[in-house]
Length: 437
Image (tube, rainbow, N blue to C red; front, top):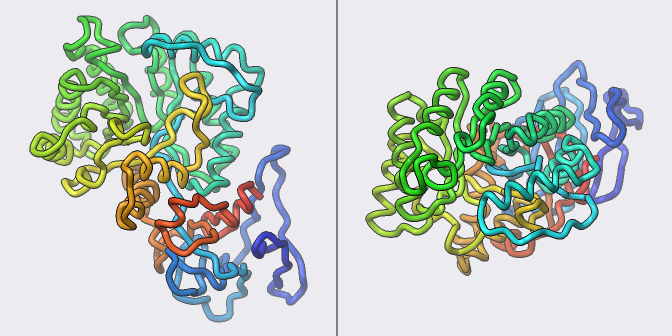
């Protein structure tokens, strides 16, 4: 079937008979994908307005936008009803293993620092009745239905948790194959050097074939054996060594501010250059960079751009949101992410990247159209560049990955956060009215 503005309508098969597609076997409750046909898969999305412009027909052939329907090839038709087409979005930083999304309400305890938060993570993981793989799937499927086409997911690796988080997210990733692309990070949330056994688990994760990145956390603050303020080379030696030996990328959380955060950032940039890992290293949060301005910000941006170190931000507040436009002007790749969603750290979050663009605009006190559009582009293109994905600009040659919504223009979509009427992945409708089909 083809879905027209919330109504199921029949399409015409190549033989001129009304019908629908058959589907392979699948797990109960999982979305299903059409079996491949012998010829090219062609879908015409009629009467849509790319980025709020003039109404056109978007034609997808085998998952790529083209100028027109190939001669003699039958096409399915989806009526867009004049809706606006926007690129689907990329969540560059999310923790699906921690989530209590869809679970009963859990009250949270006061926490004074990272050590309290990670202790609470373990308590919550042990208390929740639903396996981590099912919770992760529930959240990731919801994200996909809101228009997320790809994500970089972090899973805690610690003796108290083992590799259960990695395995659970990997299970969810497989169930969502073809709907959302997932990079997986083995994240030592509890520290690398402060907790015995973490290094061995990271080694196991690196050899498992499940992950694309190794993580790290605050080597000058939380995970410093020599005391806060001095970079602990043991952590960076370990994670960079793992990345080099196993051909993995790095994604390191830096919450520390001031010089406690800037010193390890400079160290990470130097190691990245020395090991030839340009383009494969990211730093999450980088709150110390969010505090910079003027010449100091430009010098730090130039250092990161030269080393090929990317950053991710999660729009927590005005004082922690990275100055992503200034950084991008200096050549730094910056992505936007959800971070934790309904977990022990916070009761907030919804894994909706359009809403996350709204949060970025709110944190910036954005008023101008260009400011609001920049927030959307951070969610759409910043994360895509960081993950090495093709840019979705809704032009011929681009991936046929987009969503249809009611609205006039991109700035309005950021402010209104309208319902995703249709979500399209590789030219196929994968979600309707906020739910996977």
